[in-house]
Amino acid sequence: MEQARKLQPLDLLKIYGEIAFEWHLQSDRISWSEHLSRLISPEASLVTGGAYLNLLSPHALDIRMKALAEARTSKDHAYVCQYALSLPSFQRTLVREEGQISFEGDEPKTLQGNVRFMDEDVDTHAQHQQPLGGYDTLTGFPSKEVLFENLASVLEQASYSGLPGAYAVISLDCLTYLAAKYGYETLLEIFKGTGERLRHEIRFNDMIGRTSGSCLGMVLQDCDRWGVVRTADRLLKSVKNLPLATQAGPVEVTLSAAGIVFPERALSAEDVMRQTEQYLFDHQNQKGIGIAITPYGESLQSVPEPKDEAQRRRFR
Image (cartoon, rainbow, N blue to C red; front, side, top):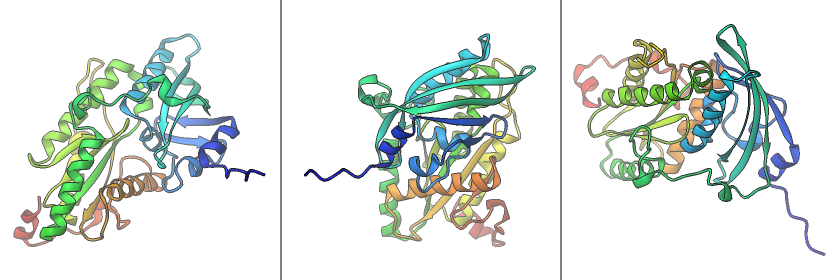
């Protein structure tokens, strides 16, 4: 008799059928009807919009945000869309999402709906398109694959030289709210404009890339723990303190950030990326959006700055 195959997390997700959610748009928090997050992402929580949208490629995010933008102007504010979702296990699956936006006046408040994990072959739907030349078509930044190669190279250099480097991930929060509030074209302006502002805040030899639908990654050379503190603080303030100009008028953008310093521990490039995202979304679960953290579990802003000026300038 053939031995029964052990059910994998993706199999269980498909067995669940429709999994309902309520998305609180302004806080970017998601309430799920089932313990979905531990099946999709065993290590990082999926209670914030940034965490969920991080599982979507930029192309898949476009599909979802276009559907939301159309719903905001429809009579019943309802939408249906299908897109590819990437699991931490590197499996990809087709997801069908249905929902309805609730407004108070002109202000989008909640998104109620459900997701269903489909049996169809995701590759037959062309939901995941590799950016041409390894660069994101919206921002012009390197793709995750290109950023990964750069990070691996910097990790090797840091291990050889002993000089620290760092990797940081920046989440653009409340993207679902922004799509429901302003529409698809303005959302593109917001994402691109935010990326350009962040690029101007880092050094010429650091690399910034688009790693997912909601996140940007940064490889920071010659950067110690305090360098990550200063960088994250500067990046968040550069966006928070000055609303972004768009065709819909000035828009306030909320970011969250996390960073990890190497080679304090022997980590591969894959581990560095994965753990940095895990730190970020786990802390968003605890403290909400608009945070900046280190892998040491402390608020970046609370770490005391070195008193020695030479030490402050050495890295950053």
